[in-house]
Length: 374
Length: 212
Image 1 (cartoon, rainbow over the protein chains, first blue to last red):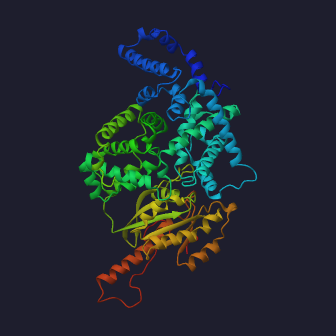
Image 2: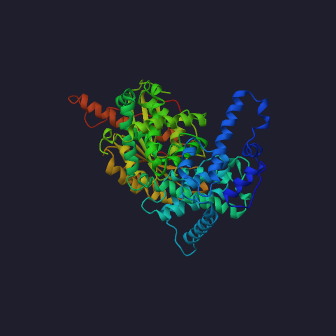
Image 3: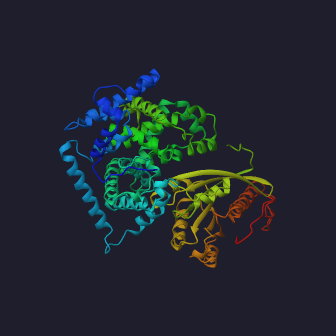
């Protein structure tokens, strides 16, 4: 569990340093193939060279003075290499400017802004909103239970601050259960920029405070950006979720009529299972690793992907189990959908799902008349 | 997974109460004999079933576990429809969750069938040293409001079986006497009960403890 730590809180610098360390990358920068390539089977070599190639394209794109965002989005849609994600996500979310000269100063300013937000929000003479605080206090210890990183008091205090500051600044929704889940991928991805070991097993107390603050601030801003696109999911009555679930039901009726008919015949309502899929963006259905890969594509798709594209992903996700579901009765269906067998899902499964969703969205997204009431 | 349809009665029951009082663990203890200290919050509703024996009949309980947070009321209230029983859970170590029982009762009155059988459940009875709600007080409140009452611990499993057994038996009593009324109106017995509700024939230890 040894980790190399650094006090530098500029992710781009970290990436640069890491690039310097990486041999294969160094080689590919100078246009040479991986030296151990000759001994690998051809296929492996080919795969590796594709990966190296992709990585190289990312790096070329990221090293531009003013990053070509459409190009970056296009690349990111196919998945972002782990070590580049901590800078690509903030870029895609607009948390970090595309112009390289502005990056450090912007990040510095935002992190200071967050620090002062925290200070004001938790000032001694200020009363906490008891209802919000109480709910956050209950939920933080049961966020990713059993995962070492999230059981540390230090991570939990960070999460509390992120959630509470966000809730106070978004009074129309406040804190809603499930938002805690959505904060965790950001925290883990940003943490991964500073450590070499697995983020989920990491003990954050050994990080210097400045680094921890930077991770927390970046997580806060990126979570805010994500939530901006799905606020309707969390305000009173949760109209965003109702809308999405309704459209999903309509879409499934179009793309898989036998399944839709079977669900109807068993009196299964989409709300009974898809509510959670919308509320937690499938995070209760798939692993965090899978989620992170999924978000690469969502972030590349753009601001409304978490409400729009997600609907197609959910539809593709449901249809995936069509054959099984059509053999089941009400109870079987509900129980099955409550604990889906996705534990062994890899990036590949997620990528299949995303491409199916892409096909659906290209076919149906502009066919508004197919959706009644839209 | 499916138990098939070999049951005599199917009762829909909802689990309600404040966030963090242990509703999901009560459900998993009853349906799977599992308890997990590390449970994620419930989002929306979750579902489980178990069949038990009441007076020689197989009663299948279809239980909907609801999210406790206020924001979810709109969605969870939809599940009260058709429910014949409700377990209204509070945490004996958190007084505020007991205070909120009144609000939950109103919630049921507004959205559930007026004949719904309600049981007040003081959970986490294992936290004796942290008790914040006296048993007698809750018992009196339940009696005043026509609720049955029990204290449980999903953690050490005490009274969980009894809680569900009791509410399902209560429901069974009402439902079977109703169907008797309907099917045999002419020979309806006078007010005296023709159905004697004996403790269940189930061999498991019955309603030990604080159930009243």
